[in-house]
Image 1 (cartoon, rainbow, N blue to C red):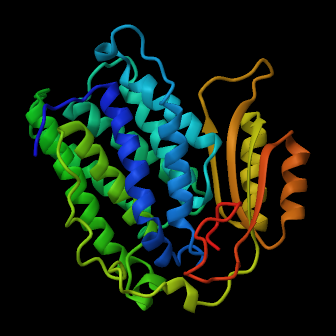
Image 2 (image 1 turned 60 degrees about the horizontal axis):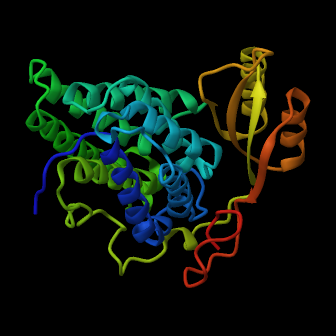
Length: 341
């Protein structure tokens, strides 16, 4: 069933509500195939908690007296900042980076168009790639990039057409490009190829993009979208439970740093850990010229990482989560630290 196209701020709120529901419904299956960068089976959980933070930030968001003219960029910026502040894991952090960056080209616009969509997706994928110290293809980054390229190619052929029809074509292309990229992940990473599965974060990003298409175009989610993805059938096993435990911990926090100290922190975290993600929260500096940063790293031991972070600033919202946890797929899927139990 198709209803009237709505590409305004209200549609963005619907998008994130739909994404919260969709990721929640699929979190167990996404967890089951989560083996990269570590086999900790929590990508679905982390992505769900982060998307939920974004969606719920907009429940009280007041666009002003004329909802139809509300700033789409401001709407997504509010959601993105909430997601960044509460981001969980690699996947949640990268999604929050994606959302914050996508908001920037949309600032000052009351309606999404094909051209704005292409610009937003392109800005978002570039920012996500740059947030990681050591990004690799075959992850949700590749899915973001493919969606942006596909939407951009369609928009380039529309000669500036700002109609809903052109927007629909670009949204369809973005989802189709994302799906192709998810399929390709299996052959881009050795761990996925050996396990004969696709990337968990990539599947989550694909679902999120289809929720965007659905919310804007007034169409149902594509129920067959994930059919045939390797490892994703409900009868498939929890792949991560059969792999060796991953040693170490995940450390996350938010901290205000000068650009120099931020660069220093990234460099020194790269020396002691991996999966380093640092992204700016908001665009404004405080009175001392510091910017807020969301920090994520995997390290063998938390103490040196936390000490390093504290040596450069005063972090808040520090979380330390073990990467190796008991792996019973029949247990409660969400632990207090956001990792799958």
